[in-house]
Image 1 (spheres, rainbow, N blue to C red):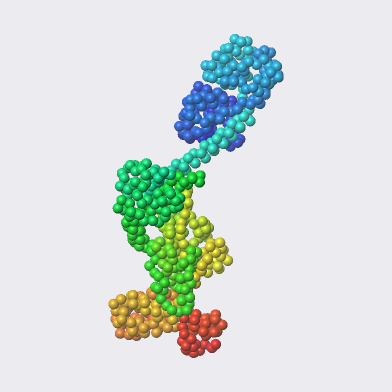
Image 2: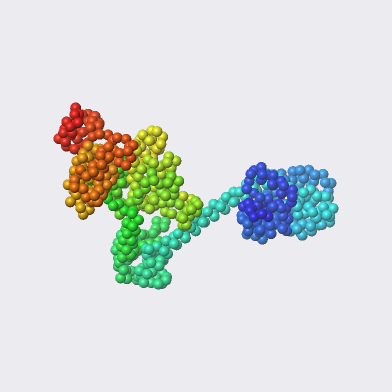
Length: 639
């Protein structure tokens, strides 16, 4: 025998049956292996097969009885059908004398009946072992039998002793029937085993929770006697081991919510109690079976431990950077466009739906996302940031959903928690959502719909309570029309949409932002250098800041470095003027960069968008009507 065996094995007592069964199995493509063994060797053969994984056996009647008697094995007998005797009975009728029918145990009634109808003088000889088989043959010869009919056990002694013999073979129908029965039994065994494994796993989980949870757990029966108590509850009650079992709960906790829940049948939730000098937070839940109150289960949490754990969680989240640092008060500026965006964002904070933040690069989309989270009911939960543009596309699934140990080469021992799980009870910010590959979008959509994740390589799903805020600088509607973004994912994300205005549409906010950045970068020399910095901003009045707030911040930082190291007397300093000229020319460090739109072009475009209405145009640009009129006159723009 090889190292691998099938779960279903057919043990044939003869070479003829082995060949016939093998041909049928091949034709059916059935998962069955065939082994040949005599009645004496069948038990040993089956025992070896069981050790190597066999679960169900197929055999003829005698072998089946032997295996069931000597082994704890599931055996399907190949049924003896009347069709098995069809050809033999015609020869038996012409035998010219009495015919011996050899069979394990009893001959079937239908065979006896057909022999009677065909006027065959049939005699039955039963056996239960190889030795019995030869004894039966000798007895049949002594009784004057002229012909023997039977299987492999009596065939060899019959031929040795000179009795004409017709070997009985199972029909194809009986073999096929046995194979199908064995396959059904194997399926049932696997299903039952899976149920038992799941039940055992569930019990182990309950036991693990019961023994190792940080909560104390006590269960009482309908009489108020303690039926279960875990180690934490034992410690709170100052009762070592199981010494509290069987005692009335009032003897252990005089003012007990368990007793109240038992008497009223109503849950006692979120209550504070004093137990043996320990203040605990408890919940007591009545247990009903068949409409009858059968007891109460209560959980206890030591308030001091609870406070300590909460503190550790908050410290851990802060250390991991999973907290939102910014609030709506950190969003600087007073232009109408910005004020409207902040107002909308604040209204979204109280909602639970997904938010899609749209805006050009550098407009502060993450600042808005953090502010929404910080103002939401989830503010105490984690805030997890994922930049979809920088995340390796091959690692996207494992990073977002996590993986189990051994999921792929290089996977960490013990697996890894995904960002969705890390953001549980909080907010997941998916920045640059338009960059995720099309083939991954379906998986993300499923998580957003089902609110559960499956770790890479894992077989179980984990529910997650996460609010998603997505951001993009792309036109996702256009991406959908061009087939680069799934429409169903787009509509799932775009429940609450928020458009962040670019800096060129909030011109009046530039000095406010620039001053805040300069205060941060100039530090102690802020007041000293502020007048010179004001002159720099005047030189940049016509610049539209295509890189938005991020570009403004970077420019202010460079200016701050020059001012604090070169100590220029005024804005006319050569280094400062060179930097300003390059900024206004849109060249920065790259001389080949294209020229940026002039302020005149920005003003003209804004007028056209607003039907040449001065009030609406000024509101969009975040400047006063007087300033807009002055600039129109300066650039000779006609209404």
